[in-house]
Image (cartoon, rainbow over all chains, first blue to last red; front, side, top):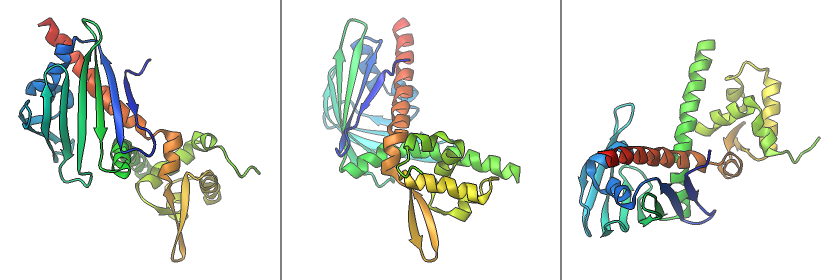
Length: 154
Length: 106
């Protein structure tokens, strides 16, 4: 199956680009980024605040399977409907600091659109750490499974 | 004996993959690693040697003990560290697409 979401992370650079084409008209794709109840559904997060305007701010909160809450926040620098959102993104209580995100929305045909998400991190090291987070979480889960299996063998 | 081992050959073995998973969460001595497996200790040592030769693992002397830790840089080349990150976004975007297709139908 073709991979719809592409990640371009050049080695040694402090940025990455995520691209995705959607079977959706541009307006619907953009709506999914601005309507709080829709954002909540696909991001799997609670939206505490989402001010879709220049100098607005946003605040999300997710709850992990263990019941721990994780906060995310940032400010919106640029908001051009159906075209562009420039914003900062920060995971609270982590050493990663703030990242800068340029989201560009583009119409391909009447029912197809593309999102281009350009993310800039403070350093190459931070980018690589953030990139490896889902990998590390996967490893930890696999590790727990191995431990479970091993402890049952003993 | 071929010293320049192929990393793909190294990670093709299930025991060696299990070793990498173990060591990924924390540095461990050969003894601690071996205690997680039913395999004979010399067999585990052999696996560790192979993983070290192809630079997926690094050795670090700490007092009298040698600790093995993962060489993230090398792992990145082979295991594609980025894939779970990409998958995370793919899942989110698939959800977005499904939700908005229904929204369109409304």
